Length: 111
Image (cartoon, rainbow, N blue to C red; front, side, top):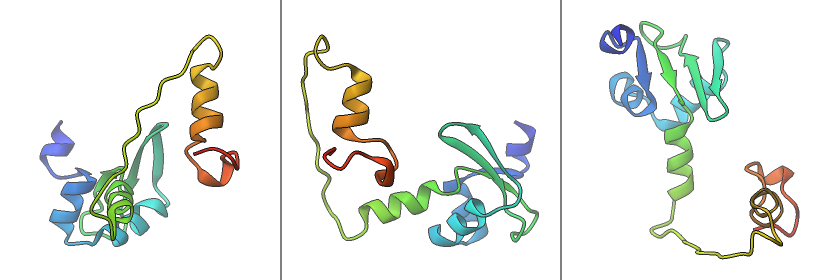
């Protein structure tokens, strides 16, 4: 809590505001930091060695991903699906129907 209060640890959103970076600049700094640590499967902490006071940013990639996802789009597609869990497991649905998170590794016929 003290590190956050002192501005030594920032969220991606706070980092953009305090450091005056674009989301692409923050992404590059965070993604390729030599001081980057995986906290959980979806959370990373990166020291921004090129920024003043070298703050640690949590999920520095997030704002760039958001900007890239919505770039040129003013809508979002939403799907509601139902399936029989007796014939299709949740894991099989996620892996083979939706596809894994990395599109390069996803099955060709997945969504």
